[in-house]
Image 1 (tube, rainbow, N blue to C red):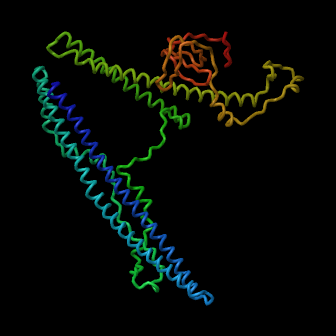
Image 2 (cartoon, rainbow, N blue to C red):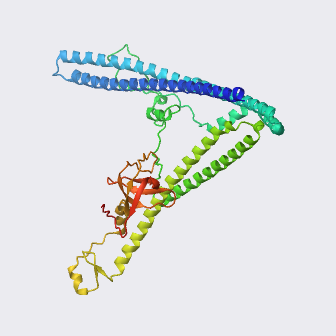
Image 3 (cartoon, rainbow, N blue to C red):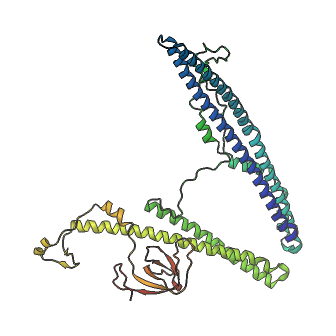
Length: 458
């Protein structure tokens, strides 16, 4: 099975990756060539428009000097020569623009009706060959298992029948129907004539262009819009997406984080079930060597163990974000209620030194604190750091590569802002303000009673 199935399918997988990469590279090259032709056409059109404006100015200057009785004959001749020169340059720009337009329309038609369909055809054929190769591998796998495990020969016959019933055309059509974009090739660009206001009285050798209504540019079809549509093989813009959903409001962020934690928990349960099943299969192989080699299951068990650890780290990271959001929401609610209570109930007055007094005569000596609007309090209080409840000393270094963790060196002294909740992690803060989780077993913790955020080190 290792030589006939696994090695063959790995080799074919590498070959098909290279083939697919080459097809997509050809598609990108064709797209880049079409963009280059569009740029050349756009440049020639702008040059044509600029030359037509210059020719119109030369025409107006010549007519003004020709009708001016005070103008000298040399000035009139010079203006006439300038008009001839500008008109000739406008005609050349017109011919160049027409040639570039015709060339781009032809290349665009070739790109969308010949090159792109041909590339998609190659990709479809490649996928059909992959489907056939996969069916052959299934058959080879079934034959190998039949020789080793006669007990499940009936199941293997069902696999053979399923492999033989593979319809590559139908599978390929399913993929096409699932991923087709419905993109329609754009139409040809119309010819935009900017020389219609130039008088041809002084140049008999130029070709006059009529002014038909059909040559008016369609405002719905512009070069800018055409550029926006040519994204088949280009890079699409990606919107900003934060992993911790910090761009969302608190309530929406809490729901999204809870949803992600539930999904990760389901994946973790699946991986744990798979690991249990692999361990049971390994025990069966160890007791009955004729059933299979236990060593062949070790890579899969190691992979499953790695997935379990990764999912646990992801769950822990999202739970930290969720606890942060829930803490902010609860703090906001408590601040709002306390602000309303202080505003409505005037029982005890707090002195500037922090002591309370009931003496009404001392109220005049105490300067009242200005009451701000609760909305502005919430806006600024959300960014306040959590108070420290103690300090700790790092016993071992920790790199803190995972998101949400805090790197530390041996001997570092950190603030404790949240105790270990039983998961083996403690939330700490450095003196520079960086916060994150560190392993509880890596630090020596000293909690302080009645701490209001200030930590004193002895």
